[in-house]
Image (cartoon, rainbow, N blue to C red; front, side, top):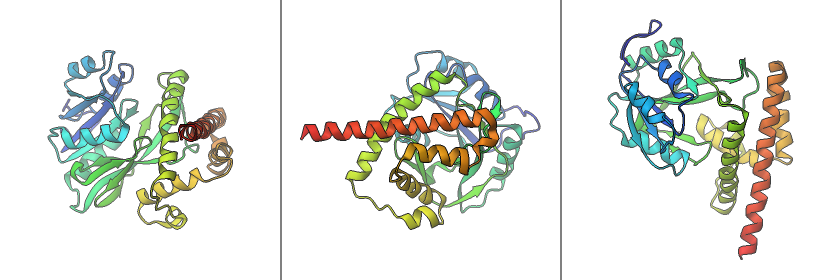
Length: 288
């Protein structure tokens, strides 16, 4: 996997981590996009399809672990796998690394300042062939990290705690969340909403350091995002608010019919979290 592709410097000092479960459909394209890397690790959650066989045939290192949460799985991989290089690029099977980003990553890793512990890049989400340029909640994600200086928290829609500076990359990477069809997206978000509802209850029951000021003005991006998540949980008519935020405030209408469809799907997803949170509260009250 170390051959240069599209002008990418062969074998930059970067390892690649791909978390998988039943990803035989998307994994080949993902591996193709990181063919410049000589140390690719596939961390699999006991797939029942050909995911592990595909990874091994492509020369990737394969390890398995039963899934017990998204943050737990990422932490186990980042802190437990024998990476060859000091920098790890973490991507999902339905994501792709364009050659332009690969070149920038190689250049950065070769001359990275010591105080930088992670890099953030713009993610371009696609619905079919349409880039949802406007209709995204947060288009920036941390993907390149020094494993010893980062840790994931929150088991769904996980957030990263970084010990050090975060560098912003210019080039984007691509995400195809609907590559397996709408049914798969709905099934996955049904699981997410289960976990989100439990997170809401846990947040309200435990000690909470939520601050509106930090949600709006915290200098650290990840701290600001964490408090923004808590703030959003307190917004009245949350599903409607999410639709209006994506479609009107973020100008999702400029993405055409794809923008409308995606904003509606996100509003529906939020409504399932609201309903499941109520259900969990009723069950907890009945148990006492």
